[in-house]
Length: 480
Image 1 (tube, rainbow, N blue to C red):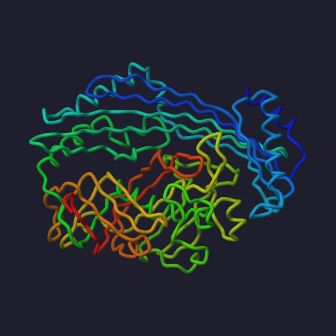
Image 2: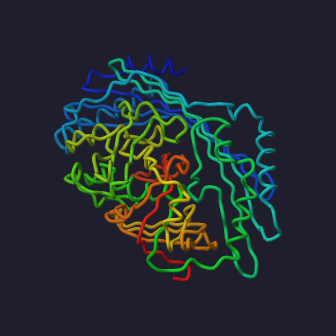
Image 3: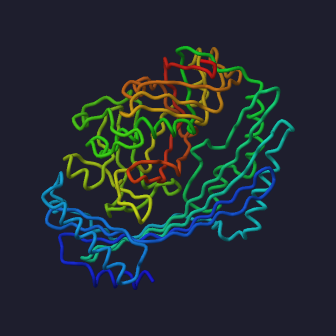
């Protein structure tokens, strides 16, 4: 079918400055066992195409799920009409932008395809994990889930460019809720963001220790029942990778998206405190902060060879030794801003045009061992797994809460604390980075749920990070 669609597109494409077709087909299955009872499977199948067309300075998009010759012709006509309407009225002359012409192929690295397990076997695995999570009568709710998505994408231009990408995404999650004496506490394997998500096959579950992680999740929920609230005050914080993931996402990723900086994007707490003039000179963080856009890490959730405008993806430093170097902007935003960017023009599906989206955005490992980081803290809190987040419209002032905390006193891990929270300002918080963990503390995570745009797009992103120590942070507990 794809070959027929390709022939029909090439036959119908008009003689314009640029014309491309992006085909997407996606199958997704979500399975959950809750309280040892299998919930009905959720299966979705989706497919369609997006046409991008540039003519006489204007840019037009049109999407269609009708992939017949008539449906493709209609989409091309609509996209051409929109481009003609925008010609001479847009913020940029799109005809002057050198759009990419990709050639190549990408595929997720899959060891032991999850599709090789029968549906009964997949439910049996989830049931085993669920039963292992019910460790105590005080565990009143618990579940285990798997979410597998297979996405097939093809990008074509009327003048012969052709790129294929095949993705296998796997998300695993375990949660447990404990209740006793009027107190309720929840713990999860990866947080509300479903932070443990990677590309690949069953090896992803091995990386997540999914088969034997239920007892730990439940035990930590029980620990939180008996734990005091996190104390309030200014102190050091040691953020573990499953919380660093969200810190990177909200206070580096979103503010550095170039369409926000240019003023195009104002939805979902849009805009940014960052301006175009800051690149190359602004000290975003301490000299220990190295941040990369890295589409090359095979297991990471948003690895790919080409973005959805066809730009070839390669690893780039976004921040190096604390200095802000380049924004997260695709080919069109780069041309508008006159700034170097990265290949991150991305769409959530066939029925949305690509916009500037973070992809794999990682903090590079440092040299500190975890025990040395703990030993360096006189008074502080180790925090794990995000549970709540809030950030202002310029992506500057933020407040985050975590599921699980442990006090650090005189260089030693001390009591567990519940409801650990901290707040800060993006423009200054990263300058308080005092130690960066080594590779033994480094974890590859991400989220399937990054929202942006109007109409809304929810997209997959990856974040990898070591543990990081920040000094003199405003910390508060659940009673503050």
